[in-house]
Length: 437
Image 1: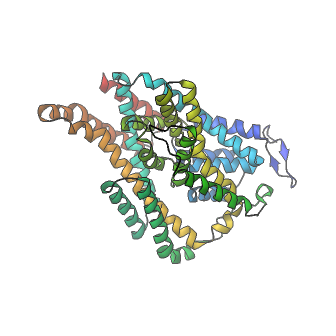
Image 2 (image 1 turned 135 degrees about the horizontal axis):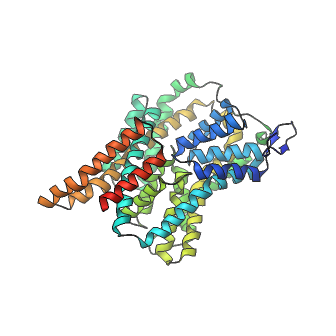
Image 3 (image 1 turned 180 degrees about the vertical axis):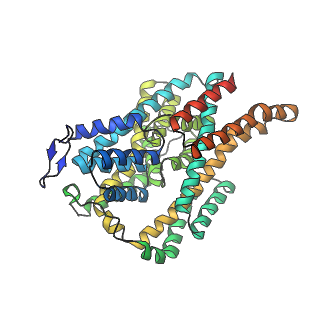
């Protein structure tokens, strides 16, 4: 028996203490680079192959449930693994352990870089990371398009969402309308196909940790989430009215609507947060999120620290707001995972529900495509628009052309040679510094 496996349940199955779970996930949180897909690979290697906490079949069911829910998929899977091993305290310990390194790094970067805005070296470094963000988001768009848009209908939904967001005024209500419409279309059109595709393979091991089948926790969770979302209509952050409650509700609302994983947080958070900071600063935070291990949703930590600092110029206040924002964006997905996990086997057999989720996922791809277009515009096109004549030609030769070459090389390194994200971060940061010098 390993040192970590110190408890047993009533059926003789090995269990861990919440502290042992925290230690395992803290170690993973320090070295899990590469985004949500890579995190799921690290989890499988660590908990299926090495520690044998669960089978491949059980692990696949947890991943499937995380794709069904809004919020950060890898963090939800980690939370479920912690619950399976040590109950609800284990789930909380797994979440804190995996998130803490990324949270601390993003908090430090937010506070440390406030004094460096406008500095040539820092501008060059962040510009290099912004170019890497374009590569990473383009890769996420391609992967999600292949996974979620395999039919003509889902491809049409994705492209329709992209067109609406590009040519209509982007707002929270437009995004909500698109999500609702996509769920209805998926339910009406895709349900007959889903009835044929659903099998009993998607099962979660119904161990003692999840033996309670009462639906009361599920309804309590849904009612609480609905109340917080409704409260968001009256409690919203603004330049005139700033409060921790408003920040929490705003990030809670974002976390409740992000389907599809870490990169999808970009378009929703961008639309909501640009009233609190500049577009360039927002993109800087997203770029820095590529350079740290752990969940990408700790971009909220950067945003919270930035908002708190701008409001108070007080590092303690910035830290508190960062904590509030981080809790707000992670909480919806974790609440739903805890409430739905005992019922997943039943829900996964409902074709209408799964068909609606397919429609949601297709529109989410459109959201991410729109975010990619805006990143390219802000990073590459916007600086060129302000120039003309010889200055514009010089910008193409000294700025735009090297940027495009670096993006193409980064894409080849990522897709053709499977280069690790850590090396890409270092290469793009160094390239940005060299171009600045």
